[in-house]
Image (cartoon, rainbow, N blue to C red; front, side, top):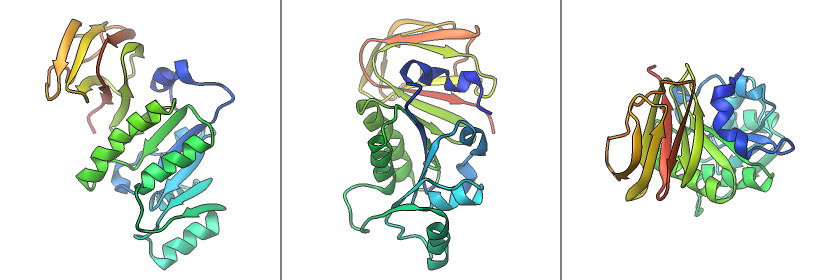
Length: 232
């Protein structure tokens, strides 16, 4: 099961009556963790294109299938059709990626917590935009996380946040997604900071660690990517 620390950064925004939603993209299967611990949280599952096969092959039936399915063979498409009741098939020529369409579907269901799997590895252009889609989720009032076998990523805007020690992810990094992140303060970390401006492209906040069970980080301006990692 998912432990408390892994979910702690979502707790402040979760409403008990709103569903958690897991979206599985069509990225390399080697990047996708065992999904059953998250399935135990009774999430709604959405498969984006080949992500439906990843879910089905792990024994989890998607609640919704979204995509143009242009990379799916007839045999695999039949497999998806045989298992999934709700299929949103869209034209190949479109203005949004299959993952963004899956996010649109998730938001239409009413949620404040979305987990993205199968969105890293493979093509770098897809991976970069998939991570940036966390901003769209945040702007829509939902908190999102990109999760693969060794990393947990979240996007943060200015504020103060609590972070719990998690033995699954001992390394914690902060990466600016704006030209500058201003006023960054880290408390309870091996490398603390106080009111620091961190420019885009700086490696200053890579591979930090908590020295307490609970730490805090805050900043006053910019967009920040929080990355919790482990060696795999």
